[in-house]
Structure formats: structure tokens, C-alpha cells
Image 1 (tube, helix red, strand yellow):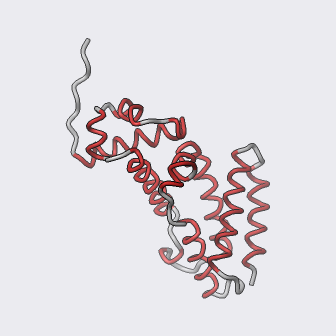
Image 2: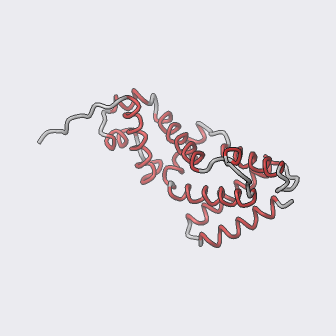
Image 3: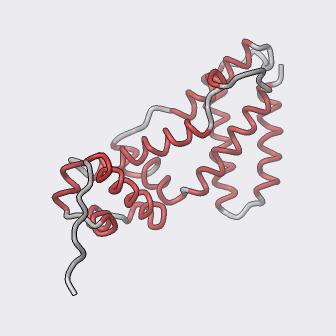
Length: 190
């Protein structure tokens, strides 16, 4: 019984296959995953990996960007929504979505947003930029009080991130979300 015949794929399909394999493995095993593991999972030679990603960090950066883009697409910013916006509710749903998204991808999140890689290649504060944009838009709609959007977004994100960590550590999700939502409402009250 020989090896299965290698499938010919278009370059973008092969790259997506490598990203899919990396994301699955990183989610299951965190930062312990290596190039060889991804190659084995995707069924490609190590040389093929390096055709698409010059380094391990380049792969991790692509996985991280994919996670951010996927979250952004699933949870559009208020400027992308049609109709009237319930600004306080939007902040609460975005926070809950972040927590659930983070928990579903705990291993890959640890590998690409924390630790050595994140120190070598820091990510622009996408979540903070999103939150500050929501705060500014909510202020323009007179739904939020006169807070500094960037500083407030930074502190709110810290609370949201801690809420995700607490739920990951076994805290009751509903209680944590209720407390977080109360905190966010008070923080942004007009």
C-alpha cells in the first residue's frame, strides 16, 4: 500500500489548506505546534510550506489576521449596519461575541495573540480600535457620555478580556456576562 497520490491544488487553495491545518492544530495544542506538524496535517512537504510562508512567524501572522478578519466579518461595525442602532446593546453583544469567539479558539488565540510570537510581532489594537469607533459613534448619537473613546476602549477591552479568561477558568458565563454588561453600561452612561 503506497502513499496516496498528491492532490494538485491552485496556490490559494494550498495556502488555505495550510492555514486550516495550522488553525486546527494550534487550537488543539496551542504554541507547541511546529512546522512539521502543520505539514503532516495538511499532507504537504516542508518545502511546500516555505513556498507559502517564508517563516513560522509568517504563518502565525496569517492565522492571526484570518481570525481578526473572520470576527470583523461576523460582527460588523455599526457604520456597516443599516437602520437605527441600540448603541449600549451593540457594545454588550460585541463583548459577548468576543468572549464566545475567544473561548472557541482558546489554543490558537494563546499562540497568536500572546507569548513570544505576539511580542515579536505585536498586533495593532484591533479590538480597541473597534471599541473606540463604537464609542465615538455612540457619542455622536448621544447614546454615550463624554468619555475619552480610546482610553475607555482600552479599559473596556481589559474587562472583556478578563471576563473571557474567567469563563475559560470555569466561572459561570451568564453571571460574568451580566456583571460585564452592567459595568459597560455604567461606563458609557450619558
